[in-house]
Image 1 (cartoon, helix red, strand yellow):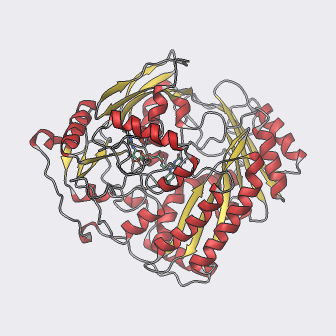
Image 2 (cartoon, helix red, strand yellow):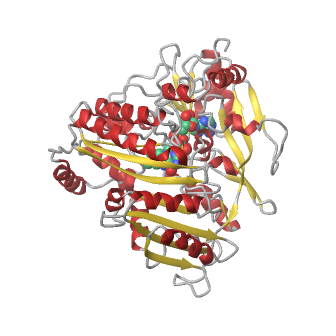
Image 3 (spheres, protein in one colour):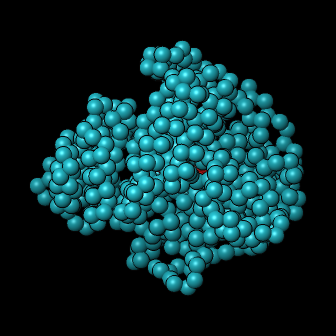
Length: 560
Ligand SMILES: Cc1cc2nc3c(=O)[nH]c(=O)nc-3n(C[C@H](O)[C@H](O)[C@H](O)COP(=O)(O)OP(=O)(O)OC[C@H]3O[C@@H](n4cnc5c(N)ncnc54)[C@H](O)[C@@H]3O)c2cc1C
């Protein structure tokens, strides 16, 4: 299948594009720096080659009626075998593609999706919706058990258009396979933006965001994709669902909620009407240093509860700030930013800085754009969003670069033999301190057990709310060749236990997939699991949609 709109340069085993991976000399330097830091001997592996991968034969051939949209192509089957978590990249980089999809489908429209689901239902083949494949929780892995005759990865890449823009209501109809940059490129001529920027923005899609309830990088206000979804189109094995566009409705439980976070188990999202924003032109930001965690947290809470609603309010621990090149490593670093398409925001920043000073924060840098008299670049043309933090903001720029380049660095660390992964949660303010202390202690114990202490842990706050906060942790440890997955499992188990027993959720924005499924049962009321299973029984009677993700295998088959 010649796939228009898909990018053949994608790495079949790691993040993003092949040509953007760190070159071998840089990986070598990384290995020696890391080896020194961990006191370990890091041996660099070369990346896998497609032609060396042992790929089992597909168990099924495309039927004539679907031949135009199904492929057995080797590259596609490998690319669709995994998401992009540490576990995924670790296995893929070692050439382990033992559970590939039998075929990959590239439907051209909703009719193709319906035909495909009919075919899968009639033969009881698993159908696994695939957007950008950036899942970090086993969401797209064809690990569906033996009761399915085949596994078909359903890639929405051909559904990548912004189909209609309603400039009056400021909304757009977007197909589910549209990647982040394509959405923004198509909205830019209208002076509009979705303003949803997960770290995976470049390689993830609208359908994936909806199916996982993704979180964008703005710290407050509308940040989760849920906030932008006005109406949805879904193809389920039982039929199609189109919800109506309303700015709001009190007509019972919202139909969209059933599919937000449904992770492909109730059908395939094919498109959505999305609420949009005008592109911001006024910006004001600052970086503030704090000597003590308590003072930094008190400031963040004061800002979160002030109704100032900054676009960015990200606290980095000293080690994370140092790793990102945003500070020298002795202080907690708070990055705060405001933006608007309508009015100057310097007064908002000024008030936030007063709150910082109340808690002995020291302003390290400050900049503004679009503001009369601002020290920044001056007023921008509409539709030209600033990418960096503006002039005079080296700490914020350094952070941004490390944020965007981080996934490539992670893959290089895997090639150096490191165990390297992140995990995150959200917790109410009253329970943060205890949870955070427990997570740090448990993760360090996990690092001791798994890597004899040859590792480190950094953290940051990614999202702040009036009633709580979302901490995000990064672990890097010396791997033992062949045992990296077990090492990570030990650390993850210890950290997750600390999260769940201290009032945190198993995930703030990485979703459930297969990896968190057993854990989510501990926070999801059993009757809710039963109700979801019942919904699945109605929408997907043959239980073919992404079996094993979100719900336990077989959920929906038997009466709840
Ligand atoms: C480096 C990195 C950074 C990340 N940063 C963030 C972040 O900032 N915020 C965040 O929320 N997440 C983040 N993630 C996780 C991931 O990017 C999100 O879960 C994202 O929403 C997945 O989108 P996708 O298009 O890649 O979906 P996929 O990974 O392809 O699929 C994810 C799940 O959604 C289902 N699905 C996909 N498309 C559809 C569809 N059309 N209909 C029904 N089901 C579908 C799949 O079956 C699967 O269960 C990150 C991941 C990586 C690797």
